[in-house]
Amino acid sequence: MEAVDAGVAVAADAGRVTLPQYTDDAGTGSNAGPSTIAFDAGPADAGKESDAGAPVTGFDAGPPDVDAGRESDAGAPAIAFDAGPPEVDAGRESDAGAPVIAFDAGRSDVDAGFTLDAGPVDAGAGAALSVHTALGLPDTSAVGAVDRWLLVKPQFVVSYDTIRKTPRWVSWRLDTSWLGTATRASSFRRDAQLPTTAGQARDEDFRNSGFERGHLCPSADRTNTDPDNDATFVFTNVVPQTRASNGGTWATLEDEARDQVRLGKTVFLVAGPVFGVTSQFVGAGVPVPTATFKVAVVVDSPAASVTTSTRVIGVLVPNTTSVSGNWRAFRVSVRSLEQATGFDFLADVPRAVQDVVETRVDAEP
Ligand code: MN
Image 1: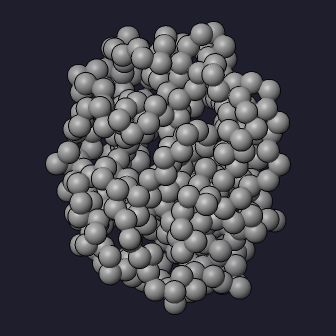
Image 2: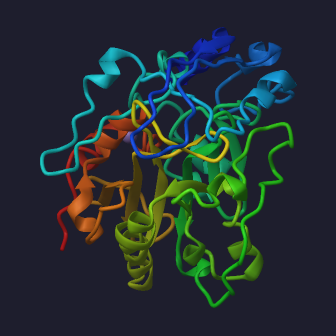
């Protein structure tokens, strides 16, 4: 896993990250004015220099005074994230016909050493971790890594950014065993799998924000038991999402995956936010994604191999108040999503197969 190791090592060197100024988007009214906040990633950075995939423990989220500084009674603090290295930015045009969105691939200190789609770097690592990541891990998330904290749950797997306070990706397998008649849970809660010192969004961040608490792993994908449904109602599985996306276009995509399962298929899914170069925020500094992405791999059975003829769907839905219509209009190649996010989807699938299924855009009716 040399390529991804390098990314972690780079992150470990960046003890102090100066975040550039944030220019408030017109109309958000949430920002008292631009400022620059420097985060100290804490003295335990050196601990991240472990083998990728290995749990990294004992990481200090940073001194309390820094955490305290993220709260703002004026609304959202002014935080912007580095747009990443120019060579990454240059490749962010979407496929023709797809929505064109300016992407922020993430913090440059984290991404600088990441070699895009170098896989399979460690075939089998995803499957060894969870059935939900059987096709591979999108990146080198690890327990204790503050900007990519790995949360392995019975119901799904998350990489959570405790600084941004949003998930980076959520990965889950969907088959009939997960579908039933459980009662939809009624409230979100803090994810107790993260230590209380780790940043996490809260209900009050979303209240009166104009944005919904949008599930990544949908509630309706976990209806086999009440506890499994309840497990989706954690803030590590939530991004700020517009009503138009969450209840509209994005919902049609969630329905499609369940429709495929009812036809006898198994679907491997990865979903997450994509951030713009500048962001608006809800509450105490939770950035609003510019778009949400989803990768859906449709196979005949849980153990089926991905081949060049496997249906692989990539979708990018703008997180706007005006987005509308069926998900099919928002299909893009998975490769374009890799360029937008810096992740390697299907990392444990042979590279030659990835090169075929990730570079075509699903066109099934
Ligand atoms: Mn890939």
